[in-house]
Length: 228
Length: 398
Image (cartoon, rainbow over all chains, first blue to last red; front, side, top):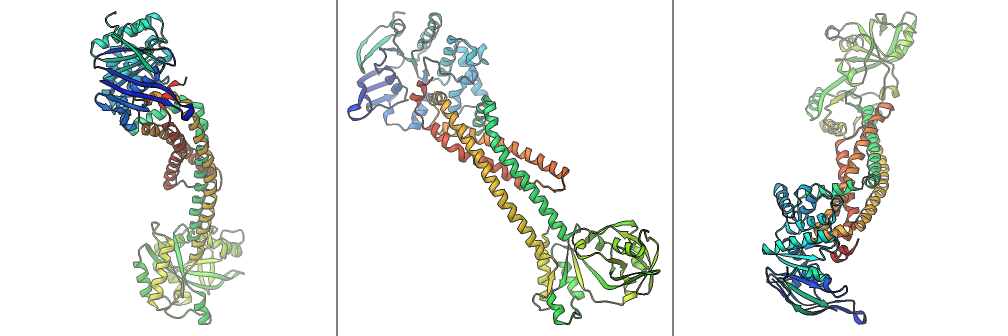
């Protein structure tokens, strides 16, 4: 599903040029549950942005489902983000003015899905994360764990092939975090491909493959799978 | 994405900051409503003005040009207006009726009092009175029998009545006109408009009565009653053209006051346009800058929202259209409120002051369209800024 070859990402020019990612090679197959671990400044967020089609590599190629994203127009990238990738952020990133239901509907608006169909799909997604009864609540009326589950419902609503999670438990207490990770396990069992960034090795242990990144390079790839 | 989707998002965003939205709209509201009020006063005045010149009966008078009299020593040439002319005038589109009057200047007597130099009119229908805006104040108007039988009856204007009868009404009194006894049956109201300006010493007789006193006379002028749906000016011009062609003459026939009507109205219109133009320009410009300012603030404030939307699959044009719709919606609501407020103020001015006002549909539509155009113009910059943001930077913001 994901095939990254020789990807470099640099910022600045001339003497000020810094390479955040250096010659990254990475392959993720369909159905895998991968944790990317690294300290802050290691380049894991930049890698995440490239994986999520929010950013382009300076060098190298990124093949996603057989298509080279590094060559795509901005409008096509937007479509990939909308249809094939679901984002889950550390800070949930819900729109505070909108109810849970409306937040979950957002990706469907950009997918051109209208009216009743949109409502139904959003309700189904909220059901999947167990929050159907909170659909009319504003984010400020929900707990952190509940907000993150709304964000997961939003990531799921367009039936993407890849879930990208950036420190999904980073802002949550232990119980809520476990709850979210249990959801991920279920989604993984349903066949979703999940790539998760974390700096917490306990969280990373929930995935079935762990990739360590340090100073812009993938340091080692160790199989940690099965230790659920 | 549907237009409606964008409008709903825009309304959500506008309602999220009610006070700010209201203050922003205020500029547009004041701009649009002041334009509406000024145009309403201008158009009301224009309508009033053209009514003053043409009378409520919507008529124009065709007279010989001055040079006709100069050429023939003050006498009207015979056959200046012919039966054929009257027929052809009737066929011009927009002419409802062709009215002729006979007129002679003469003296009136009542007992020992007299009135020298009255204008004595012979008329063939009450429509003439209506065309000149003359209404009967006391007594009665002419009845069909008066015209049929050539009855010795007369209608007089207040100034004639005062001179002959002083404080008494004069109704039913017998006066002498050219040595014929004539009974006064009605007093007319004070004249307004044109007649008030040129003097008002008139007495009206049924045409047959008039002929009995003065004999058959040449027609000295023709009045055209004009359909309201036609322009008085253009029908008048057509009539002159027809007459000049009939007689193979040039410029010998004139429409009384046609020039004044045209010039007067155009002058007023031009001045109004200049005033409206500058006020509309300035106040709407200020309002528009207010919209732009607040949209720029809004874009900066909602950086994170933009980042979230981009990450969920919004394209740059989605974001552009979203913010553009918001500024258009904001100014459109302002424009509609301004239209309502302006119409209300114009209506109140019409009721509470002598200024006539008129809010016309094209002006209303124009105001609304104009405020939308302003929304687009002043929304482009902020919307463009929003659509060029980097999603990664946006998401990093708190």
